[in-house]
Image (cartoon, rainbow, N blue to C red; front, top):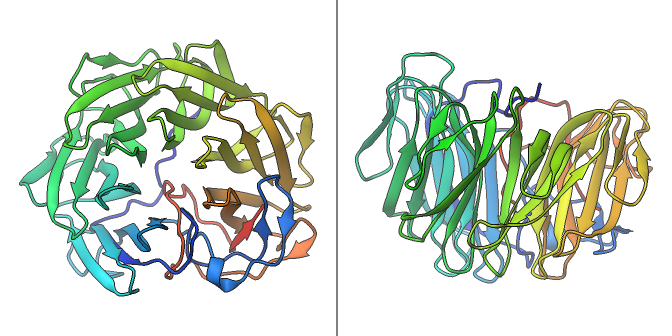
Amino acid sequence: MLRAEVPLKQILPLLVLVVAAGCSSSSGGGTGPEDAANPDGTVDSSLDASSDALADTSDSSVLSDADAGVDVGVESLDAGTDADTRPDGGVEVGDSGPGGGLQWAENFGLAGYTNANAVALDPSSGDVVVVGYLNPNTSVNFGGGSLANATALSTDYTMFVAKFDSSGKYKWAKTFGNGLDVIAHSVGIDALGNVAIGGNFQGSVNFGGSTLTAAGDFDLFVVKFDAAGSFRWSKSFGAAGKSQVVNSVAVDGAGAVLFSGRGEAVDFGGGAKTGFYLAKLDSTGAHAWSNGFAATSVYSGPWLAVDTAGSAFLAGSFSTTVNFGGGTLTSAGATDAFVAKFDPSGAYQWAKQYGDSKAQSLSGVATDLAGDVFVSGDLTGGTVNARPLRRRSPAPRAGCVMSRAASPRPLPHRAVASV
C-alpha cells in the first residue's frame, strides 16, 4: 500500500529566506551541476558555475525568478539547532534580491512542530507562497493571528498555506484539517497569481467549495485559490482500499495544473492508473489528460517541472523496470535514476536512465529558459552515466534553484547534474 511521503524525522519551526540569483535559469537550485543537459536529454559537460542549477536539501525547498534575479527558500528547522533556539522548531522563509544580499527572512513556529514542504514564487509580483503541515497540538502565526492543529492524536496533520509579499510582509494564510490527515506536498503559481496545491488527505476536507470525501485509505487532492486566497476549485482522486501519493504540482502558461506521483488504481478522468502517473487539469479543474506508467517496482518520485513551452519533465528513481512510452527501462542496480519528457498534450518524447550497480535517486527537477533540464539527487555508487560526480554538501548557496517537497529519508551522498 502506498503512503504519503511525510518526512520520517519530525521537523520543527519554519524558516523563509530570500537571496539573489546568480544565473539565468528559470528554476533550479544551488549546489551546482557537474554536467549540463540539453532538451533532447543528451548530456553536455560544458556547463560552468555561472549556470549552476539546483540546491537540494532534505528539509528545504528553494526556487528562483530568473528575470528578476531573485531566489526564495523555505526550510524546516530542528528545535534548538540550526537557526532556531526555541524549545520547539518551526519554519523559516526568506528572499534575496538581484544584488545577491538577503532581502528578508522570517521564522515562524509557536508550540509544537511546523513543517514546510514546498515554496513557490509568483512570477509577476514576487510574492512567496509556502505550504506544509502542522503536527498535532501545534500552532503557528504567520502574521495574521494564530493558526492551530488542535487534534490530540499523534499522527494527524493539518495543512497550511501562507502567502507573503516580495518584501516578506504577511498577506494571508489558511489551514485545513479534519481530525485526520490533510497534508500539502507541493505548490505552483500561475501568471495570474492563482495558487495550485497538491497533497493527500484522509476522511473528508472542505477547501471552500464542496466537501471532498476520500474514496480510499489515503486520497490525493488538487486545490486552486486565486491570488487573494479565495477558493477557485478543488478535486480529489482515490480508489476504495487504496492509497495515493502526489509529489509535485506545476502550472503552465495557460493556467493548467499538472501533477505527478504514484497511484493505485486511481482514475483522473482517463482511466485507472497504477504506478507512476502524470496528469493535467485545465485552468477550471477539468481533466485534460492523464498518463500512467507501468513499473514492476516504484521507488521515489516522480518529481515534476514544466518548461515555457508547456512540456513536462518527470524525474525520480525506480528498481527493476518501468516504461514511460518508449520501451522498457531496466535498472542496472538497486535503483536507477530516470528523467522523462512529455509534450503539452502528454505524448511521450524521450526517457533516460542513469545508474550503476549501486543505488541512485533523484529528488528534484527544473528547467531553464533554454529548455535545458537539471536534476538533483543522491548517489551511493558515485557515478551516473559512466562519469564521476563530485559529492556535494547539502548546504544551499546562491544560484538558480528549484521547488520540491522534502525528501522522505536521509541518503548517503548528494549530487547535482543535468540530464
